[in-house]
Image 1 (cartoon, helix red, strand yellow):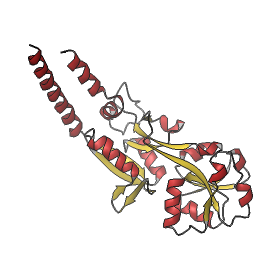
Image 2 (cartoon, rainbow, N blue to C red):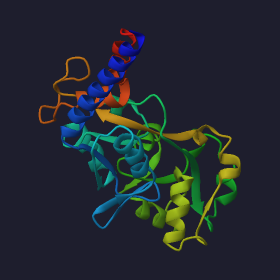
Image 3 (cartoon, one colour):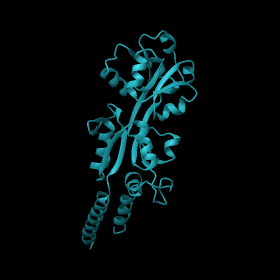
Image 4 (cartoon, rainbow, N blue to C red):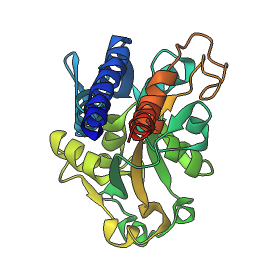
Length: 268
């Protein structure tokens, strides 16, 4: 009798897992959008998205969970607006109060980056800038940042910030000495500075800056748009968006896995 129960459990588990995977696989691909010019984290190469975040999503969601994913890149502000309005399903980003209004975010970070201040190597205010410790210390200075940067929008609201379309624009302004500083993930800036041949023009002030308030890790989390059709998981505020409840249950709550585990245990 125990052998028969064990065989039945295995058969039941196999059938249910097959049913779950068929259901998920039959759905439209999960539409994940990225910052198209954030090398090496995410970037658009011809018509293909590449980068660390893309590889993480492919490994975790496509290969391990069997959910088809469509990767697309856009200017960062536009990518966020697409998720907010329901034209895309998810992005990976730093959690901000504004973003949590229309997304559910993972508890764990998928990637951590460190924020560092960058200045012109020939800045006449270099000595002052090397002593920066907090956000408030930057109030007397002219800063630059790109549209869509949620951290900068919130934390530098009281500062003199020149807003530009993208990363390369910001770095050119720093290199030319048109602004005093730019705060961004060091892994990204180093890549772009070298690519743009600005190594001799731009330097970081990380030695002292890291111990300050702004040095907190730039934690990237997976954010899935709130469902329009799910009573439990969503809010009916984005009429044009589709129901992403099934994805949310698979990626965050793992309801199917929990259900299977309980069902199998009930036959033990």
